[in-house]
Image 1: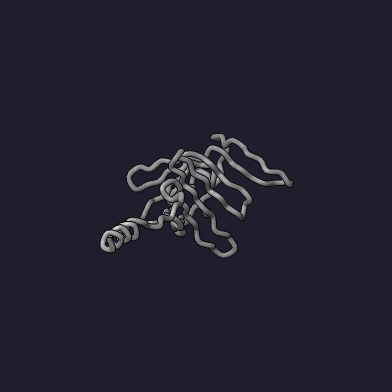
Image 2: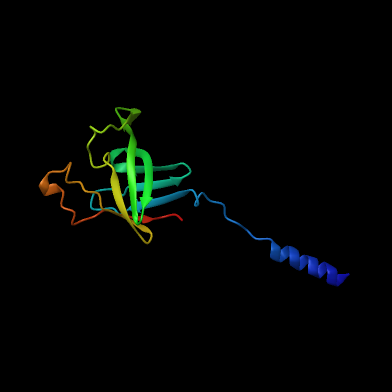
Length: 143
């Protein structure tokens, strides 16, 4: 009888395990480094549905849209902008006429657990400002 109780106790003890439940299979979070006075920004990639959010605390706003991956490149297609101005929060649809650094389609090279911005900004930035010697790098903070 003692042997049976011991065996049942061992089975119960070794078959139980603690499991941490997170949203990690559905959400990936990337954070940029702080550069001088520029606060870090965040990219949230959601897999169900396949949407993204770019959040920048420095501009009090976010951009939402669809994303896609081809080979080692992540493509972000912004569709909506959420911003807070004049004590009001607003959402506006991004149109092709909206040409800013964050409203144009963006490309990121996927390397290990990082996203490296390879977007061509020359269409919207004048020549002196489109120097890509410094590329924004986002590092993964959640798996």
